[in-house]
Length: 180
Image (cartoon, rainbow, N blue to C red; front, top):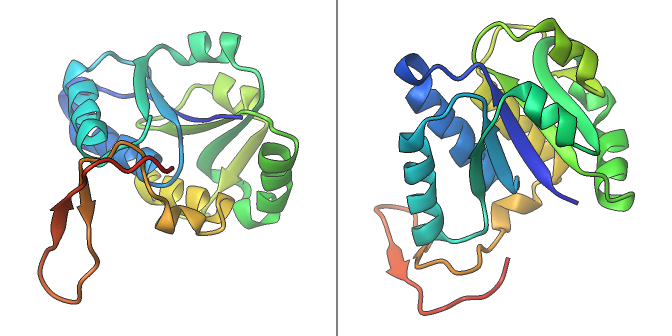
């Protein structure tokens, strides 16, 4: 079972920062990879640098949504403000992913998404029925999918780790932790 995020509509000249944040949220909240439909090596290098320092096995690839759809085998969730409330389907999706070991593709758009995405998606789900950020929608969906367990996840091969503290910043170098 794997969880991948498909970023549809990335425009390198406009969406670099937002797509980077989509990738960071994907990694931190339990996805295994992100596929971006427009090649942007800056994002790939940035995320690879995060993985190298903070650990994990997260990967970045570039392909169109049509290429992704052709090779994908599993269930797909398109996060859109026009879909059904995701709370109504989250338990069903948890069962498919975690009990039936189905691969999961989570689709988030940058601009108006093509009609084929609504048709391809197993589920078109809304985090709210209001305009919102794809970053927040992705974070909320992944958090509910994992029932909050990702908040305590330890990443393997991390070189850095944050030690929680009430004030200030406490980052330590890690010798070699091998848990995830």
